[in-house]
Image 1 (cartoon, rainbow, N blue to C red):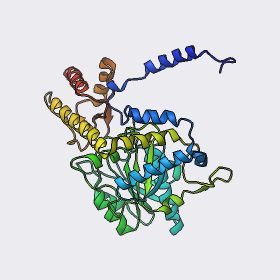
Image 2 (cartoon, rainbow, N blue to C red):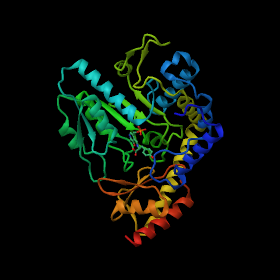
Image 3 (tube, rainbow, N blue to C red):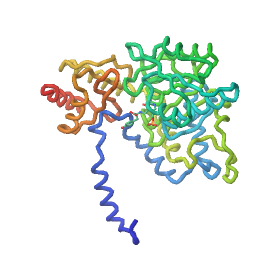
Length: 381
Ligand code: 0PR
């Protein structure tokens, strides 16, 4: 740090320079985030100093959080679910599994708890395993990249605290057979957490939806991220529990704050993101999200048609606005797209392919121009 401060103008210049080095979303086809909605940004700015870590000081923001939880509980078919706003999918997944572990250990003696997750689970579950010292058992996938029910069943034993299912996998946007997993969880008297960090703001608004939430009786918790397809600002995640005992199992005493207990992983917590999420959800309503999702799906289908025109096909018929493509040498294609045309795409591991996420910032023009550039790259690979 300098002894004396820089001028505002100097700082503005530095910031502008840094900002110009950031990629614009107009070249990004790899991200599960997008430009937050204008209404979210305005609310975020208005509540910029609000700290939900000591929410007795910010009663208004705290009420907005209750409203967000209520809207999402209703959307996910369990009015009155308990939970809180997290920093995103990673924190929601950590806390969901932490509560499973705490409740499981309370009820049964267990040396080494384990958790059964699909092989397609997001890498946040590897962090969960490390932090919580819970063994991760990865169930294999079927050809359609949904978790294999037989594999899940074979991995459950007396130390299994619960199962995880993905509603919109990071790499393929696939949805696991959650209705069947819900039955298995109930049969084995174990918990079932749904990672709907991405799909939670997509599935309820698709024309052809499927049951993935609390409507299924075995589902005990859900992670859903407003900062992905919810169009809110970062950091906005939500964790919901079917029953309050899950939240209670996360309780910490906070004697010197305005509130005496805390259930969150972080202490200081963004009230700005809470206000932003409330604002954008209230502004868009179900109708607005249906429009956003249908726009993304229309573009996804348009992309599929354009790609078929250059003989590129998906590894899996897209379930949502996440597309994995069969191409030879995906890593090379990805790096050439970046180097020669400034496109950001990502890759899938198993099977190996090129991955695109068709977020609300994507346009028909972007797709036309991307397909042309991809064709050029593929002709010389
Ligand atoms: N669960 C699922 C299914 C996810 O896809 C993700 C993140 C998480 C949990 C973790 O969420 P947070 O990152 O909010 O903690 N999925 C994206 C990914 O890892 C996140 C992302 C977003 C990556 C924007 C890149 C990017 O530009 O691919």
